[in-house]
Amino acid sequence: MTTTPHPDASADVSTATPRVVATRADLRATLDAWSAEHPGARRAVVMTMGALHAGHLELVRRARAEVGPHGQVVVTDFVNPLQFGPGEDFERYPRDVAADVALLAAAGADVAVDVVFAPTVEELYPDLGSSTGGAGPIVRVTSGRIGTVLEGASRPGHFDGVLTVVLKLLHLVRPDVAVFGAKDAQQLLAVRRLVADLDLDVEILAVPTVREADGLARSSRNAYLSPAERDQALALSRALQAGQGAAEAGADAGSVLAAARGILDAADGVDLDYVVLVDPATVEDLAPGAVGPGLLLVAARVGTTRLIDNAAVEIAPPATRAADPAGRAPAPGGTA
Image (cartoon, rainbow, N blue to C red):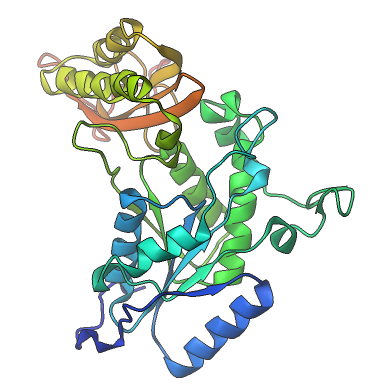
């Protein structure tokens, strides 16, 4: 599957306001009409829950670059109830499709969006809600072990809800490429496993976390933070930077994790859920003697707002011991 944009002029890219569709029937008609007019052109999707910000625009920019000026970019704008647990912020999650569309329309040709799919809950889940008395779709995607650890342990059922809506939207949009942010690292891994394990014909691309000038990861939930809480939330990115600094200085896995935890333990106003150092391919904890790539993951509440962040690290092998050919120390029991 090629990812090379079409080399011709960018005349096909529209900088007008994206077309907004709210039903599955209108979406299918819109996409089918476009495909008939653009045979062989590629389609990309960026899935969002609205409340768009600069981080989302980076995802759209990557999507547009992947499909080129003659391709089609679809943004989905839907707050998915299946991924919210009891007592979470589903009801108060910010929703303003008009503002989202205006932001996209003003973003420029390199962030041009053709279609915004903004369905209601009833449209996407006819069996969910008081109007039907139902509990939602009977058949759902199960996230397996990925859905039971870290974010999955803190938010039971969250990843089942994420993967269910991702699969639905992939079927509805039928993209060649889907672009996700790397800030939600466990979600990205779950989506990649969904695509690999269920043999879905779509390419998953990741865009690095977009941060504010002071290091805070961009998030729609940042809008919940008071000025004082926002300052306190900077402890998350400082902790990740401390862990990265320790790794760059040659620290082992345990010391890298300790450097990050030390910042969080000393931070005021931060209610830590977890900070872990994991294998980026499995989210399994790295053993104290492991070497090679790792991923620091942190989740915490600041005030009433739950925030997550992550950073990649590279654990250097000790000078007195060579790593195995795969770049990791032997696992317990003597097997790699």
